[in-house]
Length: 199
Image 1 (cartoon, rainbow, N blue to C red):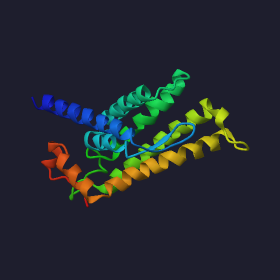
Image 2: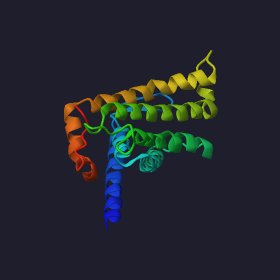
Image 3: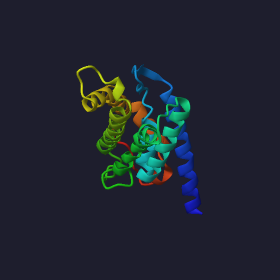
Image 4: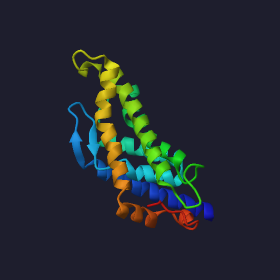
């Protein structure tokens, strides 16, 4: 019975977080000329889901989100390009789970820690950056700036929107009202241990 409840809880949180990420991805702060957008923290809901439930479920939710991104704005050249841009790039959001509530890094006597959460978001952003850089250099080399090699071009181009996207997520988490809300909606099995995101 407990296992069933846990599965239902995970599915419910997962569906809500994926939906929230998808909605936030529609709020585009800036769009790059050759694709790539800065959004209003679209990474954050899936990052929190991964933080609460672990990397496996976080990776799966990231993949679902990536597939939704493809449905929203499809661009298909080949299966390797599809994998880099829509699977690998967003599955990396699940890496936050390695710094989360079920990891040695995420818990302490005072509850959930902000620093591991921030570190997890940065690592997830780096994973997306690597995927986007590989995709840009291999599949979109024709857009390379004059005088640039494809790999430095792809790295700088993708950094220009992924770094701000990650920074926005961290800034949102720094807001007291956001921390308070996250502590309220935290899964009950964590609340029962009096685990809270520190102010």
